[in-house]
Length: 108
Image 1 (cartoon, rainbow, N blue to C red):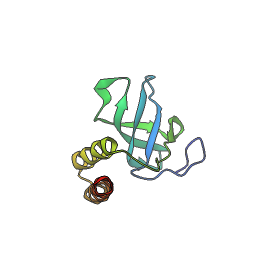
Image 2 (image 1 turned 60 degrees about the horizontal axis):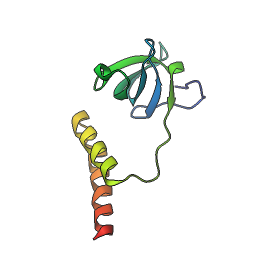
Image 3 (image 1 turned 30 degrees about the vertical axis):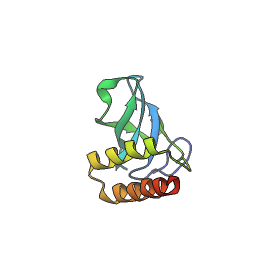
Image 4 (image 1 turned 60 degrees about the vertical axis):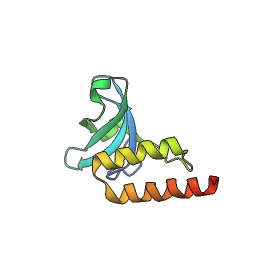
C-alpha cells in the first residue's frame, strides 16, 4: 500500500504522522486495510500519552515511513527488545537480542 510519499507500507514498518485529532504519533504498522486505504498503527510515542500502547486506525495519507537507523545504542536496543516482547514478536526479539549481545562483546 502506498502512502503520500509513494513509499510502499508493509506490516511492522515504523511510521510517524498526525492523527485525525492532531496528535503526533510514532509507531509501527500492526495491520492494513487495503480496501479502506488505512493502516492500524500501534503507538509507541505520542504527545498524547493516553495513546501510547494503543493501536489506532489511520489513513495511509496521514503517515510516512520512518527511516531505519543504521546503528542503535544499547539503550535503544533494550527499549526495542521490551517492545518486541510486549508485542509477542519472537523473530524481532531474537534479532535485537543478537545485535545487543554482539554490541556488548565488542565493548569487552
